Length: 593
Image 1 (cartoon, rainbow, N blue to C red):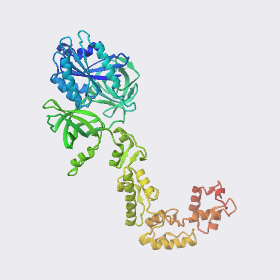
Image 2 (image 1 turned 45 degrees about the vertical axis):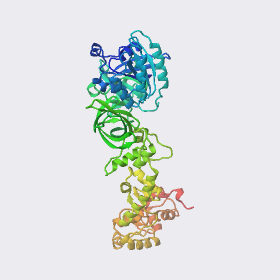
Image 3 (image 1 turned 90 degrees about the vertical axis):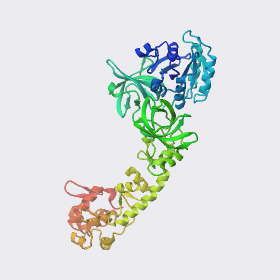
């Protein structure tokens, strides 16, 4: 399906022409039909000669209903511009053109109506000249009379040529449907309608509205029930999980967790010649109208680079188009192209000028390398919400995409941070991983651990070590060396608590020595050489199997105070196996070789 919006001055025959093309009444309200003018958005559809379906969003032409016109024009990719042959170019023709131009719409068809009442040649020439100076460019023109039917076949053929030129949306883009109407259906509940620009929606899909999950109970498209619909399309969704008073025009139904919501964006503004740019404006985006404050950052040739502070967050991405409208003058002030939907704060003096210089290089698409580099680390999901794709070769850890320059900085900083930590406290030389994460200002412990490992810093038990070799214990180093000398002679000669105290080795000192692999602790006050388990297994393998704890103590030459916890350690390591009668035996893999 293809979707077009009408545009043109009030009472130039837009709705009449749509009715003649489709056989449907686009004016939905009795007040519209009574007054003979479109007040709100209307919808109708038909088939082109090729069988392709085309839907029309019929917008109001009267100046008082320009906000409604912008709601219809915003999501549409193309325009059927209507000018009456007997009146020619008029005031709202110009304002509708300004809106289409501000939105950057590039595809249009000119229909000159009421050609039975006046020669259409003058109106065609005048209108084509006006359109040529806008984003619509040079357009095909067709003279038509809805009253007599003259030119309708030519118009249908021209519409076919127009839709054949329209770009095909990305089939993998997430769904975003701007709501332009909401109502209830007895027995079904809340129904919303809108133009689905991209993505696909299926019955039973769970979608989001302002972060709230909603289930699609049913879908209608062009008056028929569907199981699935793909953009672009005019769609009606029957939604479960929301009341009518909780949804309104300007809301968007979205694919879940797929869209970034922003109340602040950086944008390029194409200001209309002669129009002022007040700080307070109304941003028309999709079907939403949001008050916005404009902060000018700088310029890029004829364009203004600005930060827009919205009165509420909207689902928006780089490349999205919108319109700034001056509510006081009631005129279109500027076209908006979003450059950055997640801009950095401007906190330092001169930051605005620096930011403007950066934005000159931005285009209308997300640059994933730039986005990752600006943050150092960026969640994969966040990049996807902004509309970016993961570039090849980017380092990814724990769902985070990492900038290579930042990685190198973190690696050097990790070495400095861990060395500084070790020098500050000889008894706690290994830096807690969480402390390193804070020092590096990285988002997760997993990233900090990966940086440390890549920098040659061992990570064990949640701590980062400055080196693999023994480290001095400062004031306790002398006592530890005396203990090491004793255990070198006899790895099972565990000193008593009082002896450890005399050596100046308390709980913290022994814990530090164990982290450096200089001693092995069995409980709080039993300290052995690190080689004790392997040496014990070797000696025990020489005993007749199985053996008792007493026999083990005798061959190890140590007391029961040491033997029992040492045997329990060997049991836990799988070196020994304890039998039911209290006997043990060495497992074959740990016997003599």
